[in-house]
Length: 255
Image (cartoon, rainbow, N blue to C red; front, side):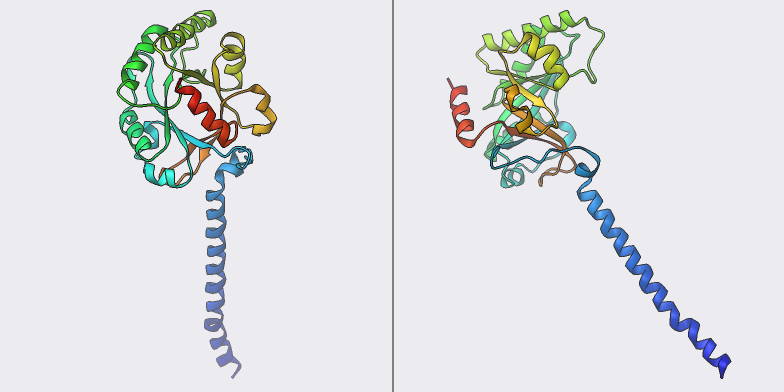
């Protein structure tokens, strides 16, 4: 009889092993899902924005964001979009035209930006930017994006400053509102020293309240946003003010 009981004990215990293996698998899947959904906060610093204080939210995109469903983006409360148009004196973003038209049709306020190349003539870059943007309607200032990463950093700083001044002045002379986009380093070396009279769009992962004294119009506070209608990460932005201030600014841009 003892031998018979032993024969039945092993097969009866196998379902327990299977059950616990399944539970462990489900727990791991659950943890993996939580990590994936919160990866931008777990692995990158993203400030907790008070959207009651800064209710006007926006995104900035380029060709690398793929095909965007702008109606879905608008349904998520996004109010404005900056869209890459050009770079240097020849490059045109492949999706600029479709993105700008479809974003406007979805009801977003639309702006365009140009990646400034230190090694290229400023007036020529302005002309290239205007040729492309002139085919579309924009609501927000034209933005010149100043970055060190991926740029031509062997150009003397004074020459880069002169070329940037030439570009901004050319755009202004043609009646465009202009704004600079840069990070903290670019603010120190370009905006604060040479172009403090120009509106600023600042890339900073600091809490907006802690840097409000800088006086920037827009803050890009994350590169790792998740917005329905866009596959993958997208840059997130806020207007540094209330809805009343936002509408007042839009009115000022028309004059």
